[in-house]
Length: 478
Ligand code: BES
Ligand code: ZN
Ligand code: ZN
Image (cartoon, rainbow, N blue to C red; front, side, top):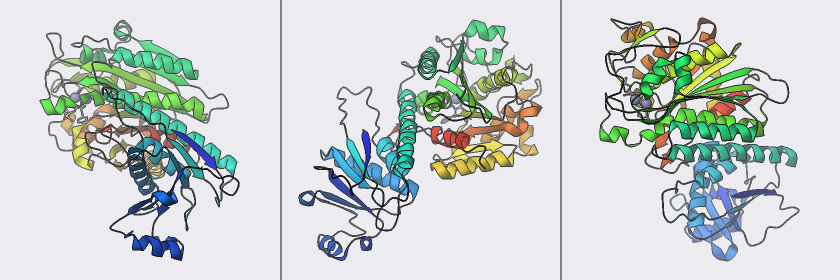
């Protein structure tokens, strides 16, 4: 999809269908209103295509960011299916200047669908023209916004594509090969560790989770250093379970059906690191991914085992399906051993079904000791449109992960508060100096949906990337 800005004061785009976005019919000129009302255009009948006038009118529920994105996605899909390839939108409606980023996100993200495994795989090329007439912003500012939004959308679609790819086609080694390619393309530091290296580094918990898989576990470490002065240091740690069948605590068929999605956190970290150079963000960012497959077999780790993490904390495995926190435990230790003076440490994971129960499937769970970090994340949520909900820690829940024979248990003794007890488990692997710098994102819900929602087609949504890029971009400004 090609998106071009133009000013209709200066230039006329011929043979394109003009899409008129309205919040009320009364926003239109009197004679246009009368004409459309005669054609039954109303709140009940929200869209009308006038081929002879080369115009498509659509009534939005509101002209707020997310509403605009959802409407634009619907418009694009409809007009594309009717064979239109060239569309014009106006940035300024009768009363309001829309956010350019919302227009672009609605169109580019709404245009994505996963077709890799379909024999008929037709992609229509769309040309979009956005009329900036009457905008309060100048062309340079708008062009910058256009480019930035397109980079974010491109990487979000990249995250969706990899995440939708099946576990048979996407093993830990595939992820480390992708990391290498991304590093080369964007001039990033890149270290990849295989199982022999993990043994040397005492990352036995991560190794145990991947032991029954025929695919070698991989620890991926990407590093972005800005060309200009850095304003701070971020460390992002992603759960990259290319498949989670639950291990010996086996999931039921329906539960494991979409568990290719369990790599979302890791893929999101890949996507963010792929975007940073083009976005030219002035922060140093480390991306660490534990890429592992959780399978069954004679070699599998077992409920009842006691494992020692890299920081020597002992863990009683009470459920092999609570494997994400095990992989993250070793990765968090690695991150803090290797990287000094961290300003912000974030882990991102499809960690618990309990988080979906607590917040619903559209919302990412946020847990942290620092209110300031949680507030910053809320602001990033408001700006990006990605929903978050904070879940509070408390000392009573902490007791649920006590173990009789080890320092900590990997599964809470009650499922209630499961998203929080998972985070409290991770907290055992956060060094004192980093407690207030650490924030955990549980995106088990919004990572993936088998039915379409908002401007996401069925499958991976790409959620998390915009939220975190937004968080990083404004970190020092608030
Ligand atoms: N990968 C799952 C969490 C998940 C569930 C992600 C549904 C996306 C959708 C995770 O590894 C898991 O299975 N967690 C268990 C933990 C429990 C055994 C303590 C869960 O949530 O049931
Ligand atoms: Zn699991
Ligand atoms: Zn999992």
